[in-house]
Image 1 (tube, rainbow, N blue to C red):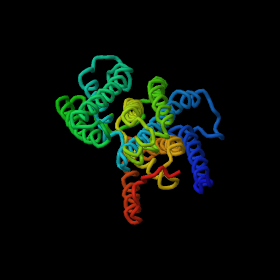
Image 2 (cartoon, rainbow, N blue to C red):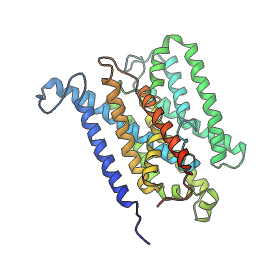
Image 3 (tube, helix red, strand yellow):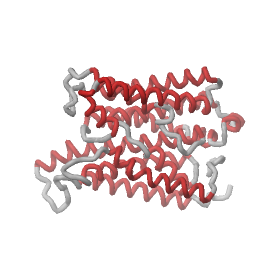
Image 4 (cartoon, rainbow, N blue to C red):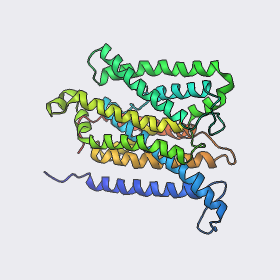
Length: 344
């Protein structure tokens, strides 16, 4: 087999992504209202800020970015659609509705962020909402016909619209809780602490492992269900595992950070344009790129209007929407087709 001519470019991309993530992490730890830079003496106050505030915050942002980017890459391959992401299947909307119900109707529990909630209630509810939505999407897809990507996509779009309407309804019924609900829906990491990292890490790491272990099946599914079946892929079973992986990734990300868009769309799409569609390299690179992108977005969110803070979801939307339009124009200009081969 001749050597892949894109291998040097992919190695360069891997080094660039790792270096960018390292820079973003260091900047996220050092820059803020209280600068923590090498020339400054790391006194006890700065040490507390570094270890108890900034380190868990940048780690939670990195976990969330990696989860969103990898789940986007998986769903784009499964549906052979560059616009697919966790929002399309309704997983994010399911997590949002469950979290909104908790914020609106369980105000008496003691908890973090001044929301009056037990620290575990919000992530557990969001995870339950995402998982329940996945089950509902699968059941609805079976009613629509064969449980393939097309039926799952239709079911996801329908349920996502319904669940989003439910979020709006709950917010309108509980105007006293509209502030925290809106903040959570816009996304952010201002409430990050070590408990949030401990809650987000297990589902995100498990979801990443499940997705990475099925990179060959994703390459085959990119050619279509029928051809994947000819190659020996058990399509229904592998789709189930891949959707479980994306559910874990989405729940881990949305439960603690709220609704943050564009990371799952842009990062895997840009990497695929630069280096091809082979998932053995794309998934790890998406994890690195997504983590770097969201750590940088969070840094911008808390420094752009200091001493105030922007919602991270607003930053990703402001930065991501123009870039996404440029990508679409470039793709349309070149008349590129969505890859039908593995791109190896």
